Length: 410
Image (tube, rainbow, N blue to C red; front, side, top):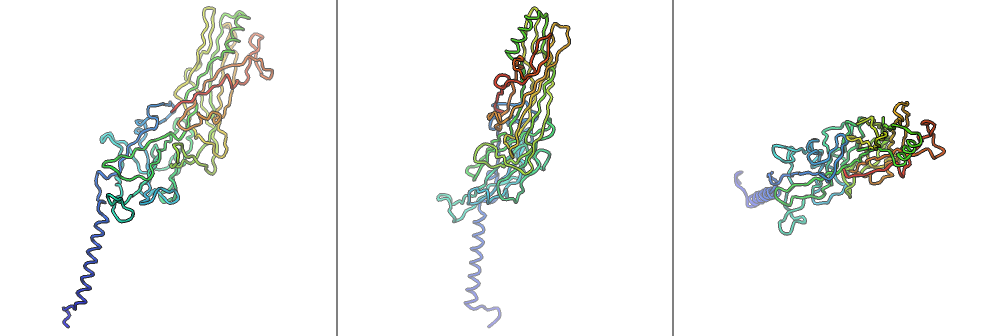
């Protein structure tokens, strides 16, 4: 038989191979149907603060609004693609997006990132949608703010892209209160899939931290004012002044912890970390000091509180390894009588545990301190000093009366 001639069996084999190749090509074409990038298939983000416009804090570097989130440089996104399956932390890693930087563009009036990701598409015969034939391709999203491209002093460690489990980051209190970082986390968006043209994913951000000492107010308590009035009458003073000269705050705080970006609730998921320690941060308040809290002459009597603003220290609202987080407030004041005598100094200190005030210990809350100078030396264990032969106490503040705490939304 001539080499160029083919038997029927040879032709049949060639035909079968050709048909199989055509079917394979068609199958590949169907598998890729819809995978061509289209603007309407892009994953698009929008963002807001959970309490946007509800409250504010004067703490340094606080992120109080969506506009502040924009100014802080935007946020980072982690996304896990799970295909047909729902999110299960033991089986996922952020393979779809890893610390993707999403920032605000004034030119586009939108949240943007690059390169743009597109929703997974595809058709097949594994549990397809009964109407469209589409297979669900699930993606779960988590986020934090402010964005960091690399570890720094506060956000000093991140989970890796190949690491199985929920994404996390480790946070440390900055040693300088002026450089502290207000850490935010987004409510997780689990098992998302494209459902509409130009659909936006809304990332709602919450505060992961609490704030202490955002405002401190000091005044003369009622019993103290009554005692001053009694001394005025008993000694015939012509002038009496109580002047606040120094206020300081010392915080013993948990230094660092791990924030897991997934949680079943809207609360931050802080976890224990080996080597967690406490740190002491001291702040001396100077605004408006010295300040006159009480002044009396033969003509009039005035009692005025002193308030410091523009101050606040972030803290991790969680007891890690049982470390006790406390705040200590110390004041110094002088009492001057008759206008010509040497001023007499007085100092008081009070320490309270942050977790004793559950509302103030929550994330997104800050604790205002209202303190009264009180006590008249009636307690025998109290040491005092003399004003013209009359003893005045320098003892501890009474918790029930002299120190109150107000908690507000951040």
